[in-house]
Length: 207
Ligand code: DLZ
Image (cartoon, rainbow, N blue to C red; front, top):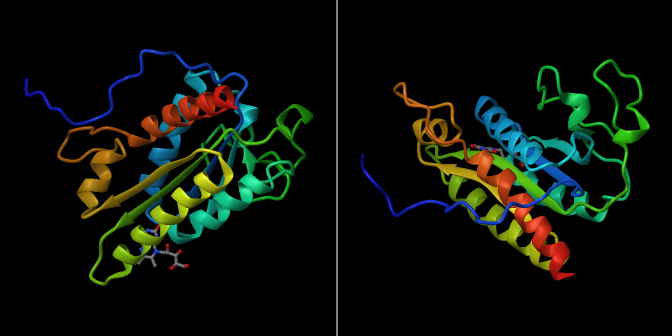
């Protein structure tokens, strides 16, 4: 077996997400890869104890729109934005239209328990940028990564960098857990879910 020095070492601390409220903002470009990453992140959030009703999901067209959405999610977290993951389960329809109020998939109001005005402890920004023939990729990667860093430093709310910057479809497939050539790859969305719980817990402790 080959060993590698690269990658994230699992934390020795087990972080408890049961009191955390987490937002996921994801782009819809390259959606099959996005869906896998979002599912990975949600699975790890729930494994760490984050309640479904405290996971709010918002979508934007492309990665370029992620910073503004994250910023507004943080500043407006006292109002209802996005959809609670509770409403999206049973089909994991993460790409649906955003709604100003959490509503169920049948259009009826979500149960009161799904509504919270607790500020977000962390926001996970998820996008998949795949290099094409123009300079689009470089401009978007550069501006989005800088903007997301600025938002977390300006607000003090952790913004998890869930943007894959892939040079090929294969790289994106491998890093989303969808795999290539029969190998499953690693779903980086799982790491982002864990990072959100760890950073959200740290920030609460740091005050
Ligand atoms: C325009 C564009 C291109 C070419 N590629 C991607 C991509 O690979 N991943 C992604 O998330 N978004 C892409 N976009 C869309 C931009 O992010 C943005 O949505 C539009 O330029 C509108 O502002």
